[in-house]
Length: 229
Image 1 (cartoon, helix red, strand yellow):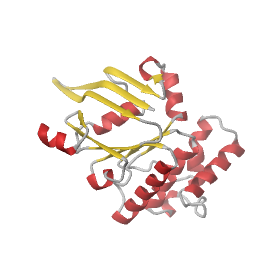
Image 2 (image 1 turned 90 degrees about the vertical axis):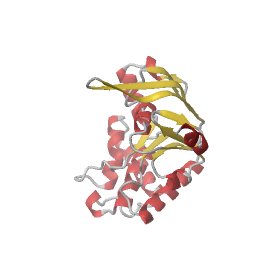
Image 3 (image 1 turned 180 degrees about the horizontal axis):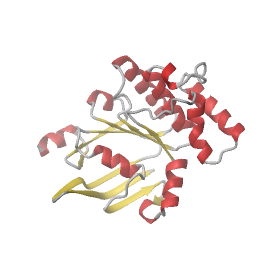
Image 4 (image 1 turned 135 degrees about the horizontal axis):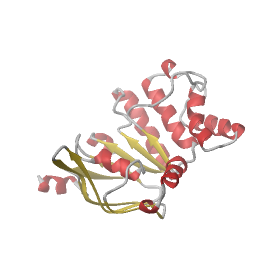
């Protein structure tokens, strides 16, 4: 589903060259649940931005569901982000003036999904994440964990085949965070392809496979990270 080969990404901060990603190769199979674990500044969020087609690499190749991302136009990349990828961020990114149902429907408006269909899909997704009885509530009327469930429902309703979750428990207390991780694990069991970005090794341990990022490089085990230090 996701195939990254020798990916590099470099930033320039004044006269300083920052190698955010250095020769990273990663293959995520369809239906796999992979955690990318690393400390702040390790390059894991940059890697997620590349995987989510929010940023393009400077070198290497990236195939998303068989599509060469580097060969896509801006319009094609926008279509990929809209149709194939669901994003779940640490910040819930919900619009306060809209209900949970309307927030879940919003991306489908840009996909030009007919109103009846998008409402049906949004209701089904909110039911799936356990918020069927609170779909008319606004974000301020929901707990942090419930808001994150709305964000997950939004990713599901859009029909995304891949879910990229960047520190989805970062703004939650431990109980709500555990609830969200159980939900994500349930989704993984339903053959969604999930990539989870986290600094928390306990959270990462709930994934089917964990890889590690340190100083822009990818390691397959903690032992490899320790030997690189």
